Image 1 (tube, one colour):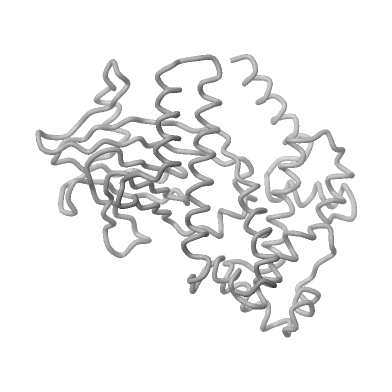
Image 2 (cartoon, rainbow, N blue to C red; image 1 turned 45 degrees about the vertical axis):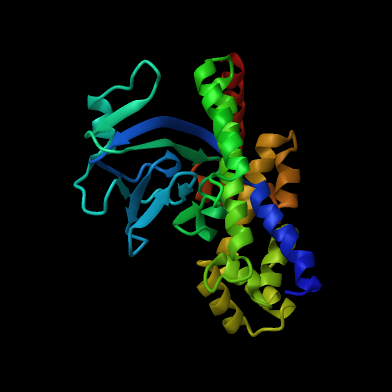
Length: 325
């Protein structure tokens, strides 16, 4: 891409990353000795850092098992059911049932398996704020795999994981909140690595849409001008395409029609603004392209299941609870 494309591609990627915020996280430290195999049901977005050893990951979205080595970081972005084991043919048991039967040791490390080579993990699950509207729900692949370099784990990964472990061991006031923010950082780094490694080569999906000489600028317009009264027709005219050709190309690459995608990012921006500012609903509605508070409230409730006021009150209650911990 030339400099013209770079002028809008960077801000577009920044805008998507800026919207990442983890609401809560749950972490485990695991040590499995071969033979071992566990299945993890659909429990939300999960991540794993391989601290020692190697193993295999299998999920339906990946035709072949993926080999993981020490220093690798993976995120099962959509929370799909998956399997981890020492060898592709090893039998598996349900992970959460296994945890219930074998509580962790005094050092807070869960151990299971046979008597063979050991594989160590730091793993966890995460829940996104505004999960139903977050654009990452539709733009990320089912699996993010940040591979270790020849020297081992990437410096940012190594340092952040060490900080996570130190917080888990400390038991200090606010530990859960600090760990959640560190998981924020881990996830943002993984997404950024995915963008950097695939932005110029992606042939399908959202990054391929960003690369496209006409769909990419349309995405940039939507993200940078949420308050405009966009329609599929007006977007198509902006990028010199017929309405039907534009709508088909956008939907094929992005995964949903233009106006549905626009609604998602508008409501995500509105929800983020309500949680992070004292702006009234009229200002929030206007900034995100709604002609009236009533129209905004209807769209918000349809997508989120609660009214904007209920959403804001829930955020205040959560913040108050965190402060008391």
